[in-house]
Image 1: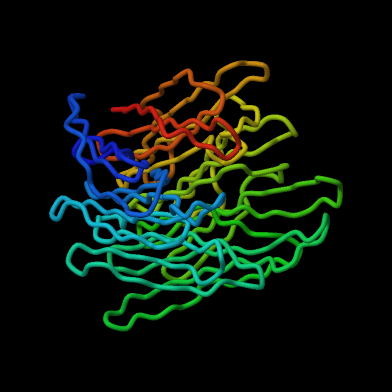
Image 2: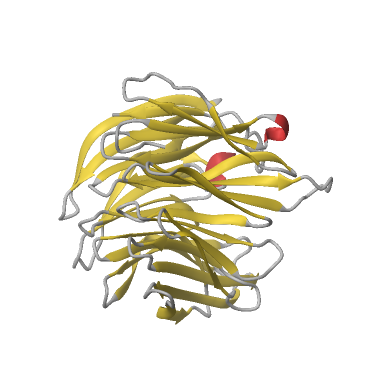
Length: 408
């Protein structure tokens, strides 16, 4: 995790049963400090950090652990950790739940975790403020089969929840498709939920992937799916939401493709949205595209990034692409490239700056040779960016060891 003072936070797990969370810092000059235990979670095994967010030197990390029940498929226990420069580490343990997303408000006032149970029940949204402590919100699921939710928080404690539902009962027949945007207005002791957008999609499904607040509004990405009526006939398209205080604009970006594997969104303090996505053009390879969405612009400016990749385990599971944008406009996108028949892969990271009109100016590029199942995760701060390289040794098994790189 790249921090605004030029340091990098290295969050890992280890100890007995891999149930202890550790914090180590890399200084701006490259020197490493000691590894310090933060918390040991009782009754769990095999903890792994899965997502993080930062702002103004503060950061939040979601860690998922397997409950030690002896079952073949045990419940997941979620550890929500927040570090602030004033108070150090605080944490909260959810007895059962899987992480949806993590966010930090643009000026570092609020952290937000959203999670859901594997066994049904409402979405849980947990907030943390250094002076107000922990807070909790809940949203009931949409439809008979539930929905996916991603959320972001503002510096005043307002929360935006982008929700999507829809299932394909058989090729050519979707049911329960819906896009909905709920906003929690933090008016003090009693806040309230309002619905900014509620749109049915009877012939398709909606899968939200990311949302970010900034510049008086929010930017979100979601994947709209439809059936072609053919056997295994998938069809996806990226949809971008751009919102101000008075309007939510829904725009389709790019063409229909066989599958959108990954999509991410971020927004600068000047209100420029930046999105990136990885889509399968044919049946065997995918390309990465980026787009900027400046305020007031009706169309997004799309750029195709060089290179293609086959559908490795990391790419096929949506972990072959990640995007991060600092509030001031430093953009970092990392992606996996793998050529057919090659034994290894290449991870490419490109850093840009984006101005208030949405124009991108390249600043730094780097590449690393990695094993075939590599995964990527990036964070961006004012002075640097950090890239974490994980490894999938199978479709669902993530190695506990990871590598990292720092771009300055």
